[in-house]
Length: 295
Length: 252
Ligand SMILES: Nc1ncnc2c1ncn2[C@@H]1O[C@H](COP(=O)(O)OP(=O)(O)OP(=O)(O)O)[C@@H](O)[C@H]1O
Ligand SMILES: [Mg+2]
Figure 1: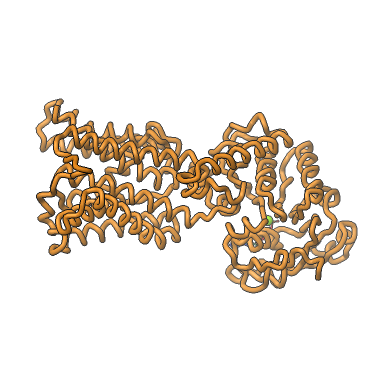
Figure 2: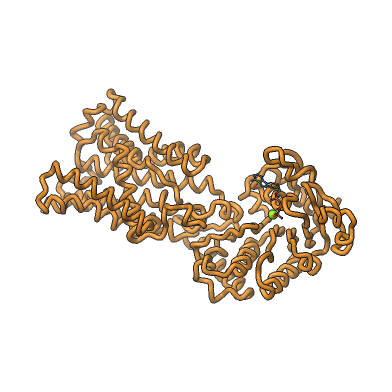
């Protein structure tokens, strides 16, 4: 039972990550490889505050969200002025820098040793300790993030994002401030990734930089693409499939060393297959193959 | 000077040594339809790109109602009352016809995220009003049945009509139309020209690039003929058509 709850909690965390990246990549069309960086920075900010200043959990959570939102804006602003393909490289650079900072600033982050002994969250006197309680907390955050995403994408703002994704020139000629819009949505996505980071850190009660590598970013992108970019439920389905898949493999009876490799191969294979036969993903409406989509 | 509602002054723009605009000037009165003629590569589209802010001129000014718009970003110019179409026809092809029109409304409260979350009611009301207005615009021009189809499912002529409707939804005072009737069926040309001819009655001014001389003769109050980035001739459609300099430019 605990095992099943564990999987559900992980799915919840990845739903937050994938839905927030979906705002950036699926709706605004900005492919970012920096999502794991915001996931990690959010986790570290909250954990460090809790460990050093012993501030309450909700304060740490809020601080992590605000910090990552601002960081997203600061990173996004120059990156978004350049062309789309360079933007991918700029986010990659940021991802690499963020990882090195987490890994090398030993006095603050503990470096490769990570930060153990993260205390259980206490929310207005409720100590979140059992798997059930963590599932409730993660599920609540998940619901809040999905609700915000829903409000955004069904509003005129969401329509504007889609227009920017499909044709920036049209959007500008229609009076939309394209650059400001991109920075804003990038910052919001980064702030949401911080929520996932805080959940993850407190649930596992230990963090180290290896959880927030570029491979992790690519995993989140895979969830979005396989589930379906630019649709509300695509990333949710994607998270369920991609998080549950390795567990299914385990039940098939593969030894874990083999299973890890098979998993990588399956992800890769699924991505290639999607790109070839269903570039819009399982539930999506937007294909990343831009050239073809536009002409 | 009071007649110069829009003043375009000495615009210059070159690409790798090719002077697309070489000190182009002209002006437009309020409620006027000005035709812009000229051979291929004369700089007509470049002029529109400069006016609408997509290209920064090397020198010169664009002044609308006394406000200098030169060098402002496209979205600022679009909200200052200028709407345009594109020669290569731009629409959000994947979105519905109705969404394309809705996108063209300027300064929508629902496009500000703060309003989406904290003033949901007022932005929803405005959205509903825009929806009604967009629907009646589509009805007037006969695209109402297609409102929920993706824009890419429209015929070429209907897509051009839709981009004109988008300019109407923008409630712009100045419309820049880049070859709106090129390559479309005669009935559709009639329909489009009918809409364009009526624009001054709604207080709007128009600059119209068009190669089709008949169309220009039908709707334009005045015509500017340009070649190699400068104005060659200006006057009523009749005058310009009979100007020896224009005839010479066409033969060359
Ligand atoms: N973005 C650009 N880059 C390089 N050269 C350009 C660019 N835009 C226009 N030009 C050049 O500037 C000149 C004027 O082009 P423009 O498109 O303004 O002509 P036009 O009058 O609209 O012609 P047409 O009737 O064929 O549409 C041409 O020589 C063209 O090749
Ligand atoms: Mg042209």
